[in-house]
Length: 327
Ligand code: NAI
Image (cartoon, rainbow, N blue to C red):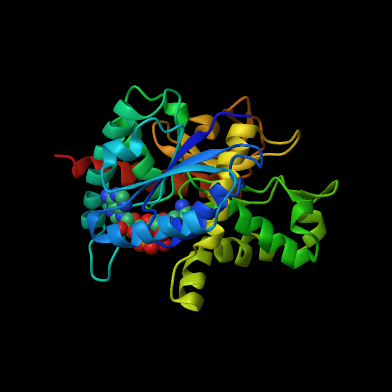
């Protein structure tokens, strides 16, 4: 039998946490033959709710679940973890300045970076979900210098899956037949959902949709603003789809992407496609042997170029804002 993998979920008493931990315990993230030990972290204010989640995990009697650590102690939470899914953060509340929210998250991600660096298992893979996801991941990277940059990523898979979903609905085809959309840049409303290389079967999506105006307009804004549309409908933000996307992200990273298929991940930019280096930027990637590689050589037309630059500029600006919160 396989040794259990320790998976940390921060903010585990929250909405996404509640949807995510049972998925992990059922093997959706790491495979149906992979035992797991869940480490759940939240803040003291949520300790009682966190304990309730732990009680439900016990009650669910998941065969793959070999242990549960539920704690408000960040060191205990991080100790020995092989995978860390960072969902905890400070939400933007009405009337709050962007800088104030950034400042709260910078201090959270700075201290959690140190705890992970000192106590996580070697080669721990980190996925940041909490917003601002790209910049929280960047701060985590900067304050955990001994964790390789390639091990620190952020979630844009939800946006990627939303793009697949929109194309599937539009063409009335199975979502599993839509392949190789791309989310470029920031997990924010400047992200660029790109279908120029996407296919259904062996046909380009552009050829099948036959409506460039829709693809360059409403399609993009629908994906960019889907989060807001869910909040409007549910009065709560996306949770099951975010949890599912987090499982997709880690599963593909650890177990690999199928031949010929790529996915979107926020990763430390090396300046590929002439986007800013040194920020966490979402690229098309393939994964093999537990490592991601940016898909190279895709043609970028003028329309796309502008969008890649715009979201890159926003990330540079966020990085500066984050750094200004450190002093
Ligand atoms: P939520 O508010 O229900 O849960 C967040 C949890 O984090 C709460 O239980 C809170 O107590 C906890 N928390 C706060 N500070 C913490 C700290 N320092 N350490 C550990 N836990 C802490 O929020 P929800 O809906 O679960 O969303 C979580 C985050 O994910 C938000 O930042 C949200 O904006 C983001 N998000 C990102 C998506 C993406 O695609 N990247 C998609 C959807 C949400």
